[in-house]
Length: 165
Image 1 (cartoon, rainbow, N blue to C red):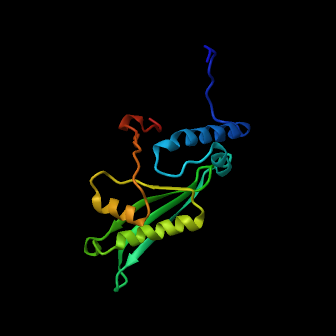
Image 2: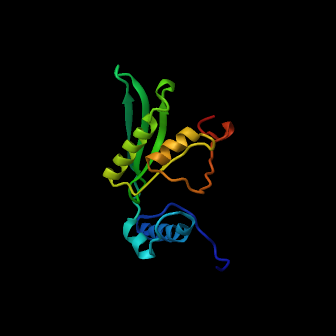
Image 3: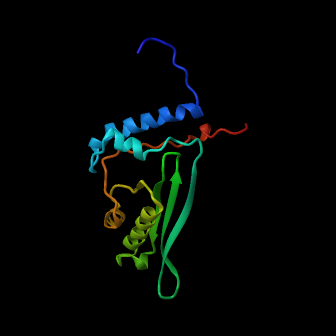
């Protein structure tokens, strides 16, 4: 690259196919780092649509009820399309203390995975902290696999929240 000036901005509608090409290249280059079948560049290109300028999504909560009808566990699912196909997340999973160690969490995760599959989700994830063994076991038994992905987070500092002074 030469020392030409670089301009930055929001992608135009005409530039979205180029964005798709970059997403395809990233997916192709990174796949060796994950335990899944390798795809050709063409296979990846065929399954990744040109991104949309809009974002759509919805929430669905599964619950587990005891014989008295009380909710004893929940699994909050989020399905969204960032413009490149459906993705999903288990946003929260919680089982009341008296209902733990009875397979409730695993059953809820399996319901979520079945829902993701039936909706045509192409990628799903869940976050949990290292050391949360019960949650990790429920996610793995439900169909998720751990990865070596590093997750970095950003939260605004109190003086960065913006707004009117």
